[in-house]
Length: 482
Image (cartoon, rainbow, N blue to C red; front, side, top):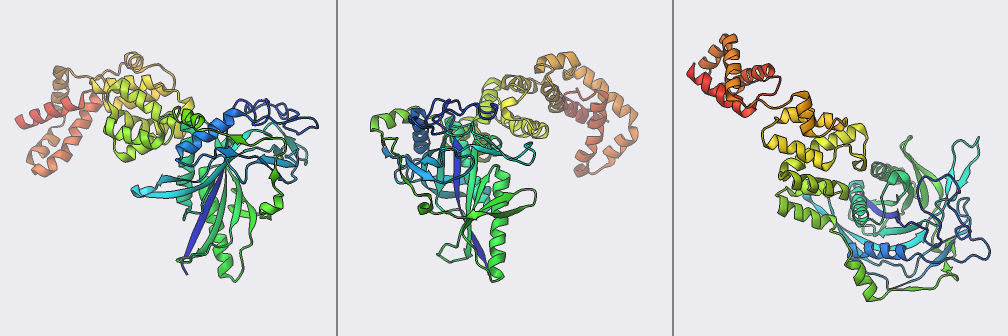
């Protein structure tokens, strides 16, 4: 039997407003527990919520970026459930009339393929608090700082058919929200969390299987792993004669398994009803169009511009534009150095390798764009070779200064003086007569490989500072004269 996995994602994005969605309490990350929860967040008697306009503006920005319908009239409801970190006993959210309606997003997959994923809707709601289970002598603590933080929940249709497609979609959403600046998208800090609805069915079957929801997955790697593990669990269960039960499950990364959390609720279980404390919010066309005018250049448009303006391949442009901070960094380097393709290579290869190895984010990159541009200029004007440039770059990552300072201090300037290079070539040939004779007697097609020996010896003599192009030209001339 050939099985097909069906996936839909619910992505929870914390909006980067300075205050909460219904109160003036701060949303800053990292404060001491329970220092940023006010009476409104706790629904104390006599308090009334007031909707945060900036949260609506951010939600509309997202909807416009997705080419989705904008809900000109949106309504808040109360979703009732009891959990330790939900002090009110209900969550203020949107159900029947959300702020963002249907839309479609194009996702790039491996091999240059694209996938259309439909957006069912996106709605505004408040976040709950957080349960803390460490350092409490066997007890759990409750931190309500997060309670009331504005969220936009982005709900897809079940259009994805593999974990790879789901991760590509999630990364595209992450790219869009960070380009817009409506969220920092830091999954490790809970700014972006994902619930995956996973089911399986026989290939060609139109009827959807029974789905399970995997809650609160907080990294791209874990989303892919959790979906694959859950799909495999469901297939094994069905093939062994069992039935999949609709339920909510948790992903255990250490044990590489999903495990039951609770039975899956449906809308009736939450007893939704319109929030009596909040009026419907009505947006007019003028308000929506004013927001449309503030939208920045989005990933797809920036990718296409990089291809046309800088002559990059579509793949390189897609890599560089996946994150706004990387795209802006590259463009600064390209403009300052005048060498877009060389800038792209250094950002995607050398800089990316350093950041990955040192576990440093692009935000904390120790090499400024102007510094990398300066290094590329020195490669371009022949001051240093590509090999020496890597030494200079390493020194730059240690904070030793800009390229010119490091080159001067360490005496790394490339030797381009033809007289000096000629002497080095003569010395190497004189000291390696046997290799010279072998070269002269060799077939033409073998000579290029044998040439590498002489080049290596010359570069060793010059401590890697001889101009490679000049070395090759003079070496070939000398050998032909032998």
